[in-house]
Each structure stands twice: as C-alpha cells, then as structure tokens.
Image (cartoon, rainbow, N blue to C red):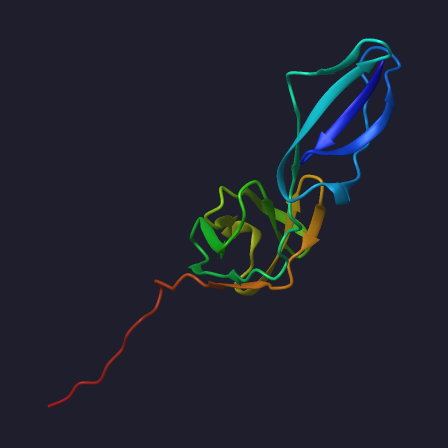
Length: 169
C-alpha cells in the first residue's frame, strides 16, 4: 500500500510505502508554516484507486522564541517571602526559567499574557541580585534571553536603635 501526503493541496511526500503497522514519515520543515498545519493522507493500492483517509495529520510548528524580551526586577525587604521578575509579551506555550548565580529559582509556563517569576528571597542576598532567564519552546529548544533583571534586596530595618537627646530651655 502506498501513501500520499498533501499539505495545502500540494504533495508533501508521495514515496511512502507502508511496512505494515504504524510508521513515521518525515515531512520537510520548509514545507510547513508557523502554526497548525493539516496534512491530508491518501491511500493507494494498485488496481483499487486512491482513498482519502478521514483523519488528517496535524503538525504544530512553533515560531522561534524571542530572546530580546525585557526583564523587570523588584525591590524587596530581606524578611519578605518572594521577589518578582516580570517579562511582558510572552507567547502562549513557552516555558520560561529564571536563574540566579546559575541556579534555577523559578519556572513559568506562559498563557500568552506575560509571566511573573516568584523568586524566594531566601535564594537571594542583601544587595543587587542579577537574574537571568531562558525560554523553551517544544521543537525549538532553549534560548538565553539577552536581558537580565536586577532584584534589590534591602536589609530589614533595625529595631534596636536608641535615641538620645539634649535638654533645652
């Protein structure tokens, strides 16, 4: 049995002969467009003609992630719980990872409305902390974002101050 694959009304691959059972067929990526691609499958047996199979193959092609997105850091107190780092204009389905000194401190799956990392203050030190980020898209891999965020952790104010004054007339 021979299979014919059509994409956008044009043959994408016509030389596939079934080995029996299930099998994989490579489709050239340059034949696909970004987004959902519907692959029509036809079956051909000599002397029997061509039959259109009822379930098309669906191939999702993700666009390359944008590594130029900006990161915006937070200012927190050392006795706080979390510091936030935000990234606007993320795309749905992209996973973002936040790193501090090479260690993963949070990850977020984007719903397409931007993301917020919640980084435990306990993973940071008093002063300026540099946060790097990476983005991952299935099929595209992981990419370092060019921008970094600075999170400023201020020390908790001291409650042991003493006040002295003068006597005036």
